Image (cartoon, rainbow, N blue to C red; front, side, top):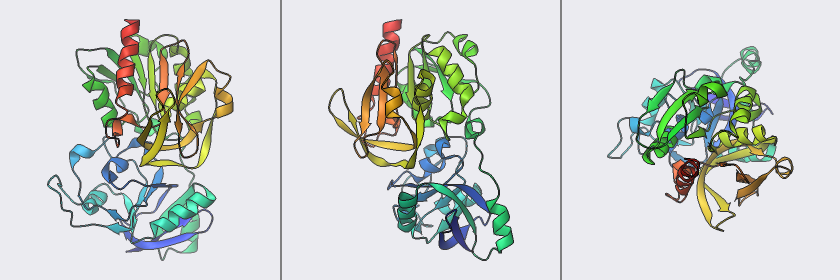
Length: 354
């Protein structure tokens, strides 16, 4: 079936369509050469149409062990060359079948570099994957459907669950956590108690945790005011470590501000400098918002990490409390394990408080 991507500025990009359903979302691009299944199942992409700039997608198939959440949360997927005959010893199925089974609208045989250039020039915008021959009235009706701004509530766990272990007890606030993050915490020996995003401070502290982890997740951090209020009450109570959305929410809870990046950081090759050691790490990133420099400069915190490409804040720590966060994803390990020290640092903070 022939289809097209229509951007809100009127730009159109044509290709072949899988799933055949209308879909609406914020159109973003990812520069990663691999990891397409992890991207599809990363809850941080909830509500978005993801364009892959690397042209060969699906060539090593899919495997259930690569999933990062209970299901894919992307609204749509756009690729250049879609491989339907993968070759890899771990492959359990093709990406084509995976997209069909999960009813993910996909456009392929598309000039994805052109889409990325358009977004880089004009900024992230809404888009619609529709059949090429859609009539104007139907397209207008699709375009009038508003985007959801409560993605965290869609992706968070519906119930509390635990990953038992013998080490420190950590309550994980699930704003859309990736499985690899939970596995990374668990590998350090932590007992993880994962709670829904709307859990209040009193309930979290009732578990008597040694530390609190703030997870990644989708959307504008300022839309999650309930989480900001909870984190504000927790900052002085326990050691806290935040990643991605958790980093942004922590900054907001401290009184800083966040802003939307023109086209975000999404890929597995983003250089970040650790200002304390002077080392530069190659990192995996997936975010469309950043912490405002001016708003954080007046707080009792120190910026610890910066993006080499644009100088945006990639990490900070409180100067007197055992609280810190990073914007990027240390668990994704494109380095491969350069940033694993951040989980060890969290353990060290809990040990000092013990």
